Image 1 (cartoon, rainbow, N blue to C red):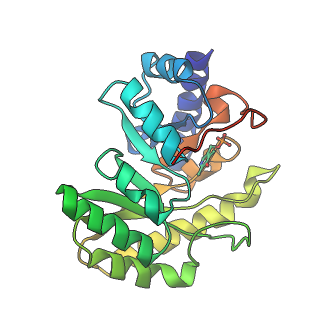
Image 2: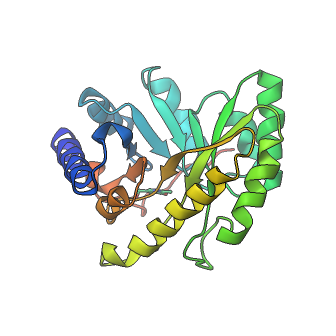
Length: 236
Ligand SMILES: *Cc1c(COP(=O)(O)O)cnc(C)c1O
């Protein structure tokens, strides 16, 4: 089942790349495995998934040692400064950096562990009150400030678009994020590249791919609906 889902998501990505005249190889599919048991992650791994996304530090720490070492783990959820130390050096990329203070903590930890941490700046393109992320107008300045910190490389931008019934409604936000990344790239800031555009989830990844996403984060479309009625452990 998971294998079939993965294949159909990949086919969709490929089809939408064709529509947009893009190369399929330029889009990374992140399997968002939050709340799902390790058996399901193993099934996805067997079917070829190598990029996994999680949104909680405790869950990442529980799952990482249970899975093969060639997995690229993506931290996609809101990150508290006091938990940064647990994931630096273990995750491939942090998608959810939305303040200088958080970036400073990541930098401190990176220097201590002598690693380079790839990060994305989370942008609240739709300016939803309920969402984390910086405003479009604050993004370039934040990128510039973060780029001065040792141990961090700013790889691009991420957004979580509004939950909508019709994905076309999010096209504008994806276009806005793409444009923002082009604008920032043109500033040629040292230590900032805009290679990654992390946008699009189960409901809207097709539109996101058409608009230039290089990472799509798909959970439900691969693993099925999540059950939030069960207790979620958060031991840290
Ligand atoms: C849960 C989550 C996803 C995946 O959502 P689906 O709708 O299940 O595909 C993507 N991005 C982030 C940041 C998430 O928290």
